[in-house]
Image (tube, rainbow, N blue to C red; front, side, top):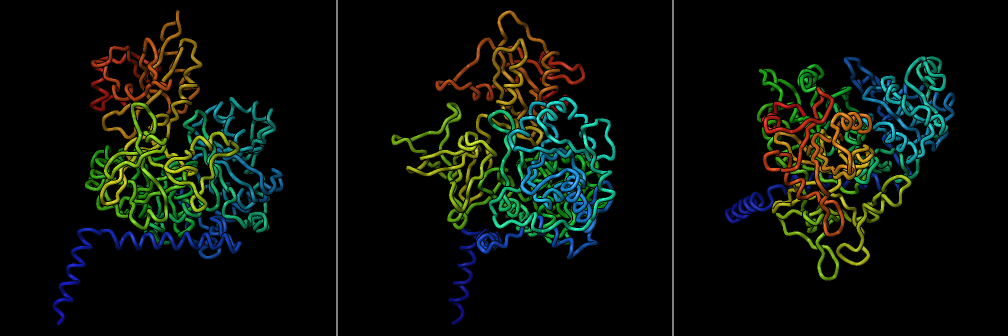
Length: 617
């Protein structure tokens, strides 16, 4: 009598393996994430919002002597960071005169005091704007104005890059405070000397209590696709969701997390530090990523999880092989932008590490997580996921740089396995908080009347493909942005900066693929003003002065006239396709040469050294 049952169970098992191989993993992962989300929403309703800061204070009471941050070989326990951030909170209130609700800009590189200042400001009830330390002069001033910060806190090693705009800041009545004990400039105030006498007792909890999950707590700058950087509003809801990332992937409190990414980006701060706090774990903070020290650091500190961007893994694969590279305790990597070929090589060289890709922009309202570890996929969708998160892949014409519409003016779904533009529905359950103070910029990211009249979608600007198993793969960025050195480069910002050079009439900036490099290298097609000649040295110095290193074009193409599309947009598609090969392009080409501090002609020889990887880009 038990035979038919045995057959039934076996056939169910076979069916499951064939058609729903990930069913159980998907279900368990989703239930875990949903339970967390439901708790958050419930806390919002019952007005008992527990923020990331409150979670930190709780951990400092629970495990005071546990190492929280290891930096440069020094251990900072939860108690240490709690006490120091209390001191800073008192200084911010008493000496700086900050009140609850003020916005303060933070310009610091990776160091424990970045976290102490961030927590201290949050304890004092301030919102914090993280500034990208690569942004220069004009960009920095713009960042202040757009988040309304009246105070800036600067790391000791950042004072030099403030020199050129100091007078402008002081004219705008912006207070400048530096993490030093004394300052040479009378109007640059110091924090460290004031810490000596400050109390390490908590400031009143009422200062940082909040009853709303949707209250802004941070502003994180994303390189705007429309020129200068934009401040994305990060609410408590977003930081709490990001802080649960490691936990969702299965991390525990005894894990040690390695953070070599810059803290001003949401990955390192919200997912990395926030995730460490959520777990009550330990993080190893690195000032700057170093490929040669990476595995040694992991061995020294018993690292179990590391954060990455695709670029970082490629640098590790490019390191010479050693006998020790499989000797470590790392079991998981969390990050984004890992190419399929690099992923495979990474696993074969460094052992069986589960790589967890996360897809989502700082300001977006959609997140994909590849919790299965499927090589090459940025995320995973399934029947349940689609019920909860409304996203669509719609047809996009790369040549025209525009959406493909039907007769009634609506977008069209792409078939499974075909590339489409990823749009994410904006609704009360997945709101889009947008950018600070700019209705215009926020509105530009929203598409309306997409599939039916009256709907609204967040335009991610990413071309994606979903396969028959529900795995989602990243294909390309649309038009105005490309990635290089792990940073988004806004083509309009680069065009505007280069357009200031006297011999340049028009600029069209785009990214081109370089073999064995992540992302795309910046290239600018330019036309010259009548009567002027191209000056590679002048252009080089201008680019260094005005643009962060990752945004400076590596290649220049001189054109007789600009090509435009039928809708009068600059034609990028053909330019991107044709790349930078001097033997197939008749226009004069130049490449950046850092030794000569100039743009020099791109010869066939130079081209081949770039292609075989001997010319460092």
